[in-house]
Length: 196
Image (cartoon, rainbow, N blue to C red; front, side):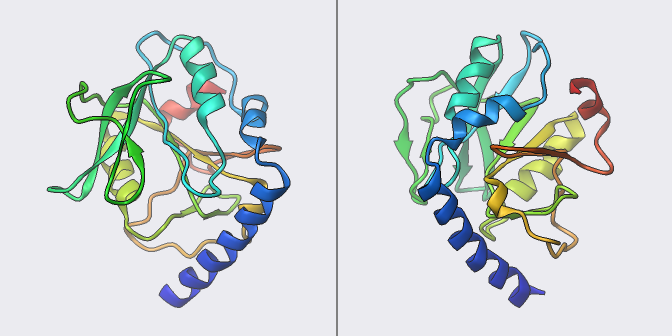
């Protein structure tokens, strides 16, 4: 199964790079595909800073902030090897992690998100996700689902594959949102039904 995952990762990187080259502003189109709902002022949305050819979620994050959401970003915890989430406002200064990811300073307030925007390399129509193989988001999802987090994979449509191999530690997402479509998991979490 690992060989298959590595093959999908390599193909996904090529597809994503081609999609980025065709439409580097596709992140603006995410707004049209994202589930429409008036946000509760207590909603905390975890975004991410894109790296390389990842689709840019910042326009979506800005719109959610304008609608009243509080934003946060993940920060790699080098002790637990997991993700912690810290408050973020559009325009805040960030630092670069050992992984080359821009993240908030640890001096910001740590929070627990209600909604989680998740980067990925590949996905399937059942909302299974293939990431970079470090397991940071799978661990975060497993932990946050206990609190009812709603998860949204953010990707180019070109990153869809016919089926993603699943292992026991892999966490499915509630939704996949692309620049031209949206998928919902076959078995959504209870809280995800509230946003349709």
